[in-house]
Image (cartoon, rainbow, N blue to C red; front, side):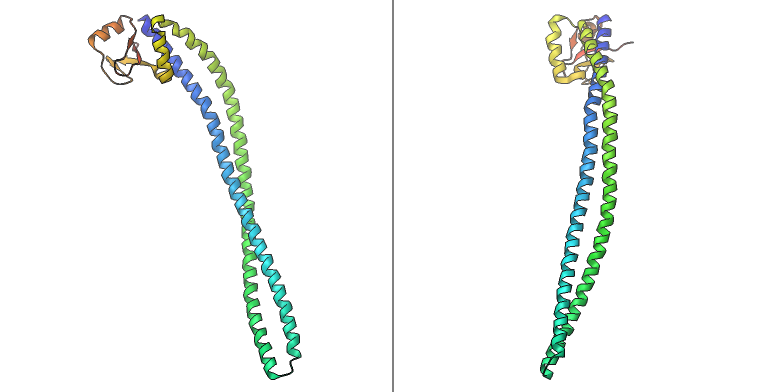
Length: 233
């Protein structure tokens, strides 16, 4: 069972190395997820600022229009006081009434604009808080990943030579096949046999294969191609 024990140990090392490598790969993804969250919050802030600017400009435009209209009203009132005929007086009076009504509507629109400006200003304040929180999340995650990866890289550096040493259990005439399996399947290049079944593909071994496996001969699964070893008892 020395070969099976050696292959089991090799498989365990491969699985440990795989777990470490997955953790190393996961770190940048975790940071990226936080960065994406920050980008979303920043976009929301930028949008709120743009809407606030547009609404402020609209309010200013309407205020300027109101001033222009008020100047026009003042001019019409002057002309009204100087009207020389009843017809001219009535025409001017009608224009003044219409312009006052238009100004009243414009004043309501300005008030509505200013209310929206205040609402958007509050949204900007809230969005700025969310951006600050998202930035802090990115910072914290980056620090956590950086700290964790230092230890993970150290473990990986120790596992690589351990795997290489454990590979000595494989005869030289099978090493090329083994390398191709590792290249294709990584840690799953090896498969434990339980109850005379390859656990990688659930295909049963023939009686002859079972005998050869227990005798210490290297056996590759005829179905999935994995390098098989007997489960430890």
